[in-house]
Image 1 (cartoon, rainbow, N blue to C red):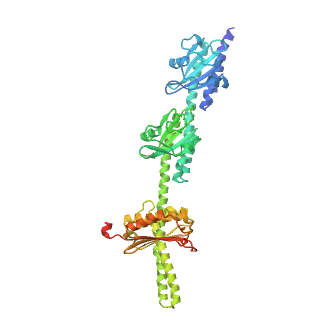
Image 2: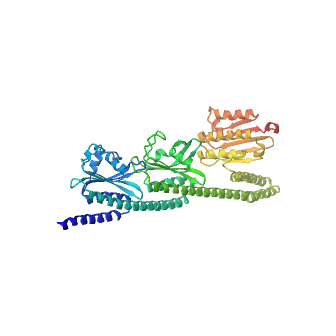
Image 3: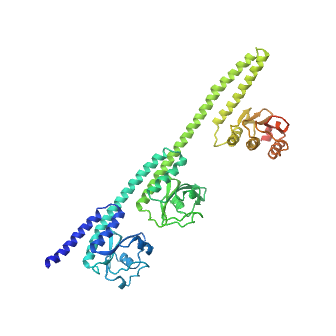
Length: 546
């Protein structure tokens, strides 16, 4: 009999060793937590078991349970938060063993559809010096849990604490490795794209990595708003382009503080009317040195687990590196623009120094030949000389366009070229605009306003009504007048047409002492199509200009 009594403790000790080995042989945290519950139930022969993970507020943040069927768990509803007897174990920081749950005054009963439970054993699990959570067991096969059961659970809880710590360290190391790989992936992708697509690359690569359901990047827009420029997830179409308040939102706080901001949930409609409900949300500033470029926000669906400290830490590091990558992309694009401007300037210089001079020399040679040939031949040569002169004028216009800065319009030529560029999309071929005379030096700013308005009105009318294939425009400035001529080969103006816009052109010319003439052969029966508008006004004298 004594031998049998000694065998029982030895058998339970062997069970504890096997249970401890089963708990520590896994590194995945989720698997470790589930194995702890299953091993504890087997070790003391309990019908139900659970492990509650404590959150920052001291209440249960997660609840891993075994013994209750999934369908029954769904009927019970929300998982416990740590009240009643579960809260008593949390507060006690030590084992709690009860023969009958219903007899303890701290028990608050069970919710509907919950299976009945009688005996109870609760043991805290410590990770280093902090309580990570509590292990709960109910309904012992022998009717009650014994002191030996409690001792076994205390020993198992100590081993479980080591296993949890190892799993957490492994999870953090794996998360850092994943973030590093993602960062290298994003950096490589950013260097292969234009800056306009850089933000899309960030959200597309980060969101799946952290198992986020929504990811956005918003940038400052004015003093009071943040604008979402990139979005990922099922709700991306409704988020992209939305404006958010600049103050009071998680993204705004992250932008102002330069640190990650986390909230447990975002109710629907708080940021804008169509905003969907969100679970855990983290906003991380995208920085390039001291300059905030924008905010990376990642969110999970309502009810999902919160982001871990390791995920928040790596998200912040990732955002900083992504900000540097964006700056690198911007710098590369700026360099390309500078190289393009230099190429344009070189082409303009070569056209001026070589092509125009050769054409001009050829024209002079033809003039010399024309002066010593028969009149008929001289007339033909004169026509070719005029053609060369027109080509030189067109090349000079191209030279000026190549050398102009489209981001900052400076003179009359720039303004008229910008008007032409703005309307050329509606025509089958680009309008030809030529300049003759000192346009920029003699045309004042207010007269340039009128010229731009007249050219815009003419080109707009051609696009809307003329169905033209070729459009020619010329600006000629001499010592006394400036003349703008716009010619097209379109349908012409039908008889009786209302000339509201053209009447305005005539009024502008009249106010400056000039005239606006419209020649449209279609107004005459049997005439060819096409329209020519000639707008001519005298140049203001120096006193008027001043």
